[in-house]
Image (tube, rainbow, N blue to C red):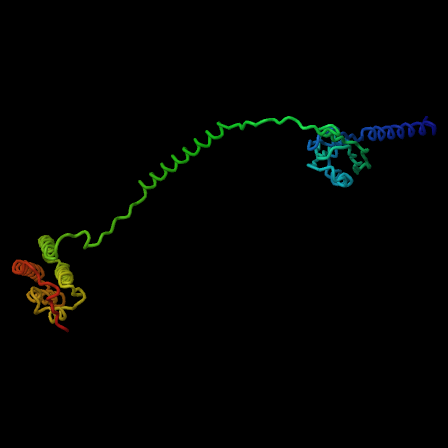
Length: 315
């Protein structure tokens, strides 16, 4: 049978176990701090490491943690170089790197850390910055002498090789581009490339038109090619815009000019074929007769009249 005394004993044991568990948790929560190098020379780096056990692992604990190091910035002799936080499995560590360029003893003020389970604080620490010389040591040291300069052959050789390699690649690429890009055809003027005279040009065109006539004697394009050939010839030979004139203008202005006067009938015959269906069946005969007439004129007038002696009649 359970009595009140048994219940009191049971509750006491439970309370004692709970108290012991909390005590164990509090005993595990501790703060450690140290200077990695308490004595340094001017400009040398040292670090203040502050660790809290156990680690602040969850996001809520990290958000509630406050690291108050305002006092360390009040001493102008201490120069803060870096500050970082390390989250390790068993602890959270804050590291402050600093130095000093003045010789002497400096006090590292306390730093307070507030976490979700309480507030912790470090104690004052002393940093010794030793001078490079003893106090009142003003002796002049011997000079070091000339310091030889070390020439980095490997680096310069790499640069030279890289430069030549780059130039070679650019040269190969340039030659490739020149070889594969489409080249523009050189356009030369008629007067620069043609050494033949106007008369020789007309003879060559007459022969080409004869060859076309043999292949297609009834082709209507022969009529246009015939008149266009004569217009270009007289434009070049007489220095007049004959290629822009009509047949009436050609006849009225050049009838009295040899050999143009003998060839005006060719323009009339060609116009008759182009504008009259009755004469369209005589294309081949008209072209052949006109070519023979042109050859006869060329034979009779081996030398055309000079341009300065030519007087074109006004229309």
